[in-house]
Image (cartoon, rainbow, N blue to C red; front, side, top):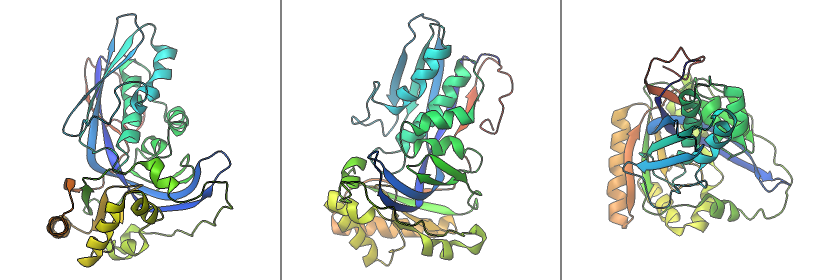
Length: 325
């Protein structure tokens, strides 16, 4: 494959339509059964190969949500995702990465995990190495529970993940006309703290998986009835303000809104943009009345992909697979 000097890849956020926590594993991870859907609120990862013989990963952050809590070094999943590839095929080159953050951090939207998956694809192209989804999934699964989803579901943006998130079954894409209203509180939610609040400190018996037979053609109302998140109660214990958000949502008859991942973002599923914006306006007004701070409000659509190349330079050869659109 021809070398690409610079490449940009979209890294979509996600919501969990379902998040069942089935128990605590002997390895310390939690056994989950979750349905994830990528949305078109997205970060952008730029990668450029540099012939400087240093063999290092350099990361720059920019954008409206390049917050101070996001590490710029090897603690960042982006750096950890591309490091092994650079060591194997870099031949002394470095990777200059620029991460444009539009997804708020510590919000349950999977921004860091998605950035890692996008960075790995961008690094492959920048270094002249063809995409290898199977290898990417294996590496990404070692970095976090949601991370592999974004590579595995790059064709539809929807998948069911089990185990600790590494066992993935790709599902059909959500209807393009559906909308997801998002409200991210000012409060942040630490994934570790939320899982600790579950109280599963020792390995526990695995709860049975629930049968799933969703058909998006059944419509939003039936899908809404199936939305659930076992972490909501634990998140309210870890971050009491989220309990106030739940009460506020129920007070305006929006009890179908759910927590995204471990929070702190809340989301509502709607059949069209008009309904989503009306719901979001109601949430914004209710939060203001309740004195609840907000970091982000917006309406997103199903992404239909897990990661996507949006820009290339120097005429690379065709890339295998559907990651390049």
